[in-house]
Amino acid sequence: MGFGIFLDLKFHDIPNTVAGAVAAASKLPNVRLMTVHTLGGLAMMRAARDAAGDKKTRPRMIGVTILTSHDAATLRSVGISGSTGSRALALAKLAKQAGLDGVVASAHEATAIRKACGPRFLIVVPGVRPTSAAAGDQARVATPAQAIRAGADYLVVGRPITSAPSPRHAALAIAQEIASAV
Image (cartoon, rainbow, N blue to C red):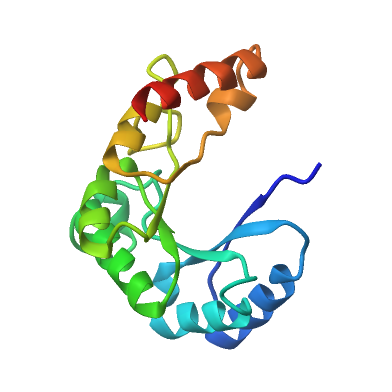
């Protein structure tokens, strides 16, 4: 159908393995955005960026910071200290240093990331829920309007649409909320 693809595979392994995976995935048709985990480190992110190909023709490389299903307790349980906001910001700065095009981060961190990383650094915001939708397994959510106002370039909206009685109606309502926030 010609749509651009957000290939959200969250590559996370040693640099050589991630480079091979990214090189192969970059050859798929219509891939516009591709994710790696920023917790893979600077060398891994640089290897992914380089393996994606020429900057003019390659998919935009986006680093996943802290999952929106994680809160401070979850981070502590896996040995990561600090707040979700401070960790997401530090990982966004690392992604920028690695030469990635942007990050995936919650709306709660988007404003700080925009300030630290600049206007051209992409921010993809998941965990987007209309006011009437349940948070589900998401710890850090925002409405579409909140995410746009926080500085999101792209929104990831899944279950509020796919689980709705009328996915079309749900998608149109979310599009309307986005339009009102722009």
